[in-house]
Image (cartoon, rainbow, N blue to C red; front, side, top):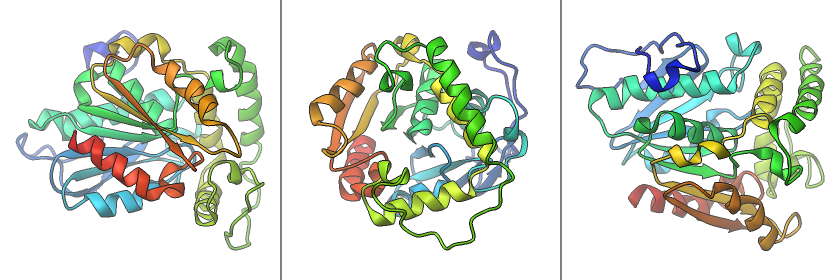
Length: 308
């Protein structure tokens, strides 16, 4: 896997994904590509679409989307090691930036370096931030980007005047609490709806959505969840937005029981000022997992994004 000069001043090149390089004119084969920090499930045929899930979430969050799209698109469903499988090297040290680099390298090796057009990327939450980082730091690897309920800097949701340094103590405290859960006995009760007033209730307003999210959280490695949360809370991409050349579409959630439409718009859209090609859509009646709460609206938005 080759070093990109745009990364050379900042990062150490990671070991490449184990993928077929038999013919540079052919895309990487369908099936599971095994990387150091991620795995990628390749399925379908057509233009390339990379799907990146969020914190503690397996690639299963994209099941409904993949079922609809795989007849028309070649899908690359990313899964972070530790979110649905063994943590491996993600159990220690920073995770977000190494994952971003590995996804970018995967796109380079399996898509653009094979003579194919740069893919569309759809990322939810942490996956959206990952996509934004790739679009700013490796713009040639992104044809267009859809960010689902994510911000360039999450700190502003805590305090509009927040900075990375002001968020760091809180990020370290929250990460330490999560790491302490590692090694604790796993719940034995069947996964069921924890209810609308639970922590998961803040992520989905649907019983099936809450049940799915709780299931993914149960199988996530607490060490990886802790570190990724810390990394997200201490990453501020606002100063790099002008480097994003791909069109960016933002979908963000709005639920009257949590936030008015006016407040939601003020929380999300101004953060993307500086992106040259930007559009935004508020999805009413939804919490963080828009694809679970408003699946029809989400599906139409994805179709419009890919057809644009």
